[in-house]
Image (cartoon, rainbow, N blue to C red; front, side, top):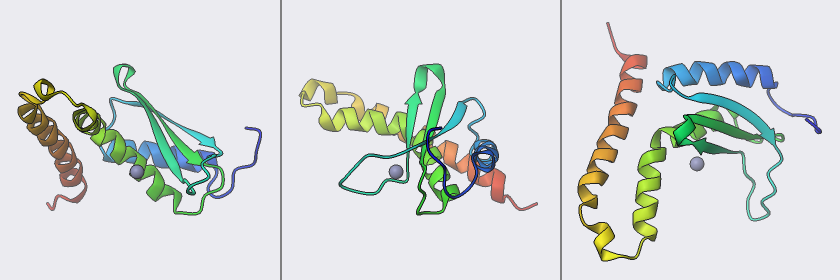
Length: 131
Ligand SMILES: [Zn+2]
């Protein structure tokens, strides 16, 4: 790292990543953190995530200069990972112009929506289930 990281030390962030990876049932993913300097001028960015679905790998990008609770930013980016497949599918659908592309896509959409909701349900039940 060529710059100093403000806020939580990287070791602490990596511990939090492991905790949330387990909580959110993302154990089958290879996750890591990268501290970067976001260059956007239009708004101040706290985090982002790079996803490589075929490799089951994702990198959470966090700003070197945090201005929000870093654990919240980390969890926010992991939520994007859970929603990834669903999100990409919808984005393609929205951006696609062809009518034929839309045929049969409602069924696919529902399947992706349900599997994403199932994932979140399992993660929440695991955390908050009463004995
Ligand atoms: Zn977001």
